[in-house]
Length: 54
Ligand SMILES: [Zn+2]
Picture 1 (cartoon, rainbow, N blue to C red):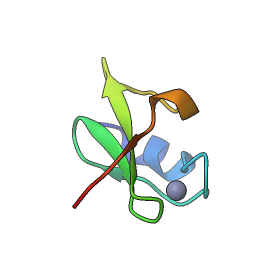
Picture 2 (picture 1 turned 120 degrees about the horizontal axis):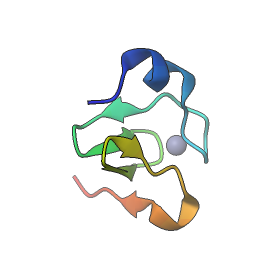
Picture 3 (picture 1 turned 135 degrees about the vertical axis):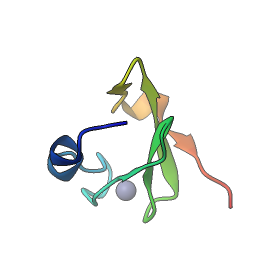
Picture 4 (picture 1 turned 90 degrees about the vertical axis):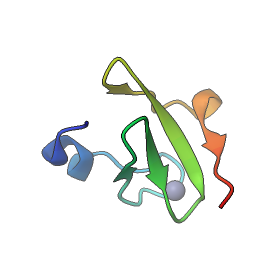
């Protein structure tokens, strides 16, 4: 679980939108991508982004 204050500061590195905490990853609903969370740290790296399919 990522602290809400931190989540408010962080944004998608592609579109700067706010991210949604999905427990094991952060979601950008605009780009339909996810950022993995490992050891409670979101990996905000372009090479770690995965595409969400819903
Ligand atoms: Zn985005």
